[in-house]
Image (cartoon, rainbow, N blue to C red; front, side, top):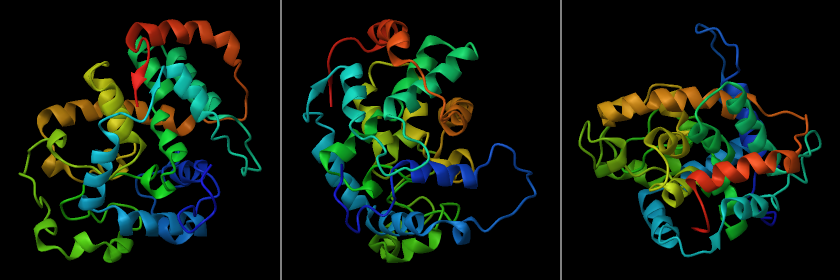
Length: 284
């Protein structure tokens, strides 16, 4: 676990996800307006202060250079699940479930609704990039709403005002809506803030269908799939794939429960599913 410091403002990683539920409740009238920034807990505010200060284009490029050779370790998907399980929310007084049970809850909800097998697998693995915490990365470089770097920070990003402390916001080249990118270039040509989404995408990018990869890579890109920002950087393929991201999002947000799942009873089904799409050891 990360040692306490100013780089660990959240009580636990689930606090960010709890805040997402507050910002994007399952039932919310379109005309309803709330000052979400003002209502956020102090730990969440501090988390985003750090995130928005330090997620620069230069920082992201350094992290990509460090992690994307994928030489940290070799693990099967199930070994990665068990490794992530060492990141139990010991500090959470309300829900004391291992990470693997949260992921199985998501996957089982997708399975119950009759979605394709690759969709179920995506639910199981979508948060595995959080093992970055176990490589001693600070929380603000692991979770949080994601966004492009190298262009103007959208005012649709939560706590947008904190970007005033980000040096990229004072770099003219990065301060236009498209920044270093061409309008309509497509998100594959856009550098996203660093975190668990981008990391896991690169681990599995040659092994899963495109809709699954978009779900993994952009499920935390709330400014786009919830607020409609950055459409000017997307191409038609992105827009088509974001329909899948939005289909996945409710399973990610609304399936967390205190109800326990029987991991051992479910394991044969998920072993078979993993071996179908992601057999053997993967490079992390």
